[in-house]
Image 1 (cartoon, rainbow, N blue to C red):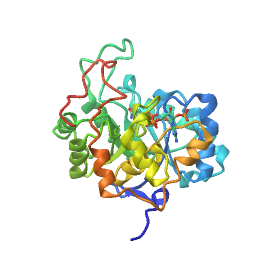
Image 2 (spheres, helix red, strand yellow):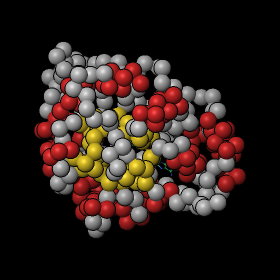
Image 3 (cartoon, rainbow, N blue to C red):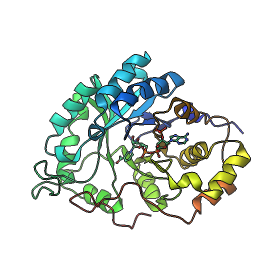
Amino acid sequence: MAQNQWTKQTFTLNTGAKIPAVGLGTWQSQPNQVREAVKVALQKGYRHIDTALAYGNEHEVGQGIKDSGVPREEIWITTKLDNPWHKRVEEGINSSLKSLGVDYVDLYLMHWPSSTDPEDLKKHYPDWDFRDTWRELQKLPASGRVKNIGVSNFGIKNLEKLFASEDFKTTPAVNQIELHPNQPSPKLVDYCKEKGIHVTAYSCLGSTDSPLAKDKTLHSIAEKKGKSPQQVLLVWGLQRGTSVIPKSVTASRIEANFELDGWSLTDEEVKQLNSLPDRFKVCGDAWLPVKVFFGDDE
Ligand code: NAP
């Protein structure tokens, strides 16, 4: 059997574009750390960087890209429209492009299905929701500044609402959602696959202070394979057909998270990881002015 070469693999989106299977996450990567992290990652071979206007680090991410010496066209850049910018899609993308120092991004995501009022972050606009935002996002690829558009933190209920909207034309290329063995959401992953939407797994290691880092089943599988628990989590995500975007600002971890080629998990190991009983969610919706998770996609 041919051995997996995950770090060279891409997933083909419904637009025909190819998203590299492994990327570097940058949420909570401080501006003074992320420039170096991005450079280290690109020099290691990563070709996919995930950022967002809301992370406040697009400028330094852009600097790291330049420092790396890797040509822009070899890199997949994803960024996201922030919630209080839903009525300002043009301004949002222009701000991100300027901060990143690039003239296009490969993927532009609606970060959350919440059109938050910038005057009061506890309020949702009464006259605008994510369907209006999507109507505006659909216009962007024609401008060349955005190659693909997608969504993030969309469950089945909101995807159905989007598909049923009057102005709906373009199926999102990607839905970026929280996924790890303690939040596997198989129903939502299958639904997206059925609709031709590629899924990117965020918080794929369980995020900061991950409870998964202590999981006994994960540790025993990692030990048996001579891999780290984090490498096992990444390969678990990749074998499900999702791209993974582990975040680290530590050079040795950035490198280790990209050492995924030439081995795979057996069906039995996947089954064990799919059956972990614990559940936790890193990113809930309590901080938003609208509910976005309905508990039916798990
Ligand atoms: P994550 O990638 O699951 O985990 C990051 C944490 O794991 C950091 O504390 C990192 O520490 C640590 N870590 C990384 N590699 C490690 C290793 N090999 N061994 C031990 N610890 C390791 O968490 P995340 O940042 O929540 O998610 C990943 C990315 O997904 C984000 O950065 C962001 O780009 C994206 N995301 C998107 C959304 C959304 O709403 N769309 C939400 C959350 C995240 P150090 O950095 O200190 O090394």
